Amino acid sequence: MLARNLLFIVVVLVAVGGLRASLFPQNTQTRKIHLDPGTTKEDDFQAVVRKVNEEFRKDWDANGLTPAPRASDLAVARRMSLALTGSVPSLEEIRQFEQHDKGERLDGWANHLLRDRRYSDYFADRLARAYVGTEDGPLLIYRKRRFNSWLSDQLHHNVPYGEMVRQMISARGLNTDQPAVNFIAAAYDDGKEKPDPEKLAIRVSRAFLGLRIDCAQCHDFKNPADYEQIIWKQTDFQSLAAFFGQTRHIVTHISDNADGEYKFEDRVHGGTHEIGVSVPFSPELMPEEGSRRERLAAWVTNPQNKAFSRATVNRVWAMMFGRPLLKRIESPTLTERGPAALDILAADFAAHNHDLQRLILLIASTEVFRLDSAAPFDITDAHDEHWAAFPLSRLRPEQVIGSVIQAASVRTIDKNSQLFVRATRFFGEKDFVTRYGDADDDDFAKAHGTIPQRLLMMNGDLVDGKAKNELLNASTQIAIFAPDDNAAVETAYLCVLTRKPTPKELEHFVAKIAGTHGDDRRNKLADMYWVLFNSTEMSFNH
Image (cartoon, rainbow, N blue to C red; front, side):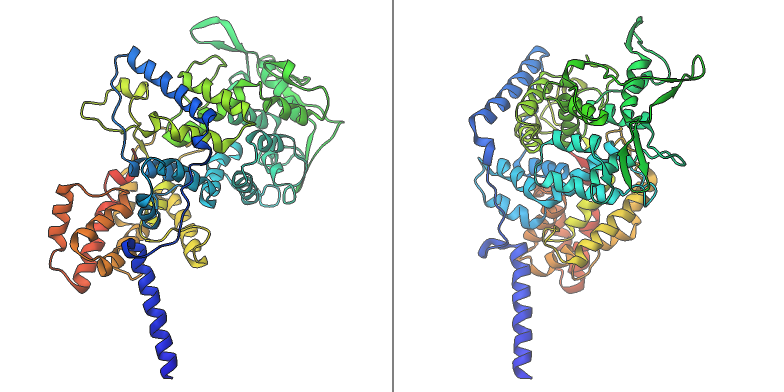
């Protein structure tokens, strides 16, 4: 009995020691993360970054703009984490980040995140919105979770983006054995044996080419500034839809049937018409061999198809910054001009076999990504328009609750976390997003906070539960293990806002917890957590 009790005491002491090490690791080692700069130090990579930086500098000089100063490393690390994993960094990661060499830790941090399964899972969920929408669809016919899981695996192994898209457009087979076919299955037309060709044409043109060719779905689309100029003919859209005219959907199986043809309804002159397949531009890029969908997939992902590379850069840039390089994610024309960085990054993306991780690293390495969102002078609309300051953007619902859940834990919540922790996060996020509100498939729509959203943050069980005085919450652990009041306040700020408090903030909160002990101290730290969770700063990427 004595031996058993001694063993129990030893286990408890080891657990407590490990917990304290996660909070204040100055005297011990925590779980190691590797901050390896990798390819970011290679000459050709640095050459592209310099070209992008030079073009932005030229634009700022031409418009008489002084850019905002460089943001702190912790602020940039927070941006990267929100963009790539959907949450703020953990305290465990921050402590190790601070111990690395300042010259390389940001490049290493980006690589660390890209190796983490949190990145592939989160990016897959974001990209899937553009590919298949947000609806779950009929259970047997369309397997959304299987599709997202497949997409996450592709991202995790850094499969070339062009190859991923090619599979989505051209794959055949069962929606479980060949998960990419769920891109086709998502366009299932209820009561029919085939997916909707027009819905698929819209998905392909918007998601992969960044074009609203569907503006010509019913009639020729003309230039609003010059009504004599036709931008897209109706036949451009209908001929694109015809690539899916032979596609069949039998319960869980996607195939092609050479007997079928696409017929479209002429909503202007009446009647239905059959139309052959053709692409709306650059027909020389489409191969002669293969099935219709295989030929379309090859054309879309051809390295010489600039629309594909530009659309990918524009979308990934938007996921990193909160808004796209162009005015919108999907343009009605091929000729919309944007910053020179768009074509520089698009050319590199095509030249490197559509390497998505390289593109992300390039964007994260640019000067504009590492600018502050504030400056000693007033930030004007011109600064925002010309990317002379990092743009403020409201966090998406899953980023808000993902950050709350992570900030309430001193350890990183990832695939190595206990099953109970991961399950709690999954169901907690799902419930919160449903109640918080997620407007539509456009995750770059201008978002405004609402009163119900603020009430949910202030009074909701999940947010309140992550702040309250409970043993597993970070606020309680900080109250117990912080060596002094200053360390307690600083640690709470690092957990929630990924920064240290200003001298004024430190003074304010230290005064609140000074001289407290036991439950009183734990409750004070819980109150502080609640205040930080509900701060404006917590709700924005900056």
